[in-house]
Every structure is written in structure tokens, then in C-alpha cells.
Length: 184
Image 1: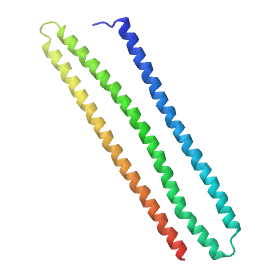
Image 2: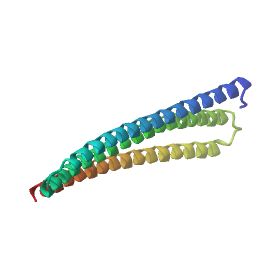
Image 3: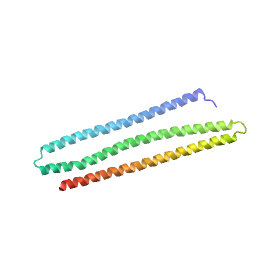
Image 4: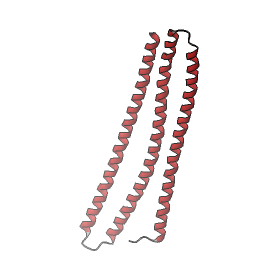
């Protein structure tokens, strides 16, 4: 089976379209990261100015300690929120790129299976065993690929659950520390 020039051109066109699609997704992700960082930086500067003004108006040590204690909990919550946003951006970009990869892999598998089937139909008599071995190898490779995809998905789900648990524990610890500091 030989490829026609039209098939080669169509294949290249599809590859270029996929490349541009993935590039656009990568730039969208970078835009989201830049926007997140600009927003976080603006908020940090504003809060720093407010905190500095509050520090300058402190009249005694107890008021200073209370002011400092009140700073820790919001800081921990904001840090956890920033981390969650960052994780969401990375996760959604990874998911989109993974979907594109899966689509390309499925298309390549489908084309390869078609090629094997065409070759099997045109194989000389007596080569049935070799064709069966090739088909079996292709099926085993497809099963292995699907198993790897499932394992990666499970690992990503576990990582996300762990990330969420650590974030909530950090915020809880900051709340507890802030309460103890205020009480002291």
C-alpha cells in the first residue's frame, strides 16, 4: 500500500493544525499564569501598604503582637488559594494536552490497524500465522497503552486529592497558630 500525495499533504496539514492548536493552548496557559501573578502581586503590594500604615499607627507592644498575629491566617489562606489557582491552571493545561495526545495516538493506532489489516488481506498464502502474530502484538500494545493511560489518570487523581488535603491542613494550622498568637 502506497501513500498518495494527497494523503501525505492531508497528514502534514493535520500535523500542523495540531501543532498550532497545542501552541495556542500553551500560550493560553502562560497568559493565565501571568494574569494570576499580576493579580497576586497587586494584592500583595496593596496589603503590604495597608499593613505598613497599620504598623506605623501602633501605640504599644500588645497592639503590635495582635496586628502581627492577625496577619498570619490571611497570608496562609491567600498562599493556599494562589497554590490552588496555580494547580488548576497546570492541571487544565495538562488535561487539554493529554486529550490532544490521546486523540493523536488513537488516530495513529487506527491508521496502523488499517495498515495491518490491508497488509493481511494482501499477504501471500501461508502467512496467516505471521499476520496473527502481528495482530496479536498490535492488540497487546493497544492494551498496554490503555493501561498506562488509566494508571496516569489514577495517579493524577491521587496527587490532586493529596494537594487539596495538604492545602486545607496548612490553612487550618495557620488558623490555629493565629488564634494562639492572639490569645497570648
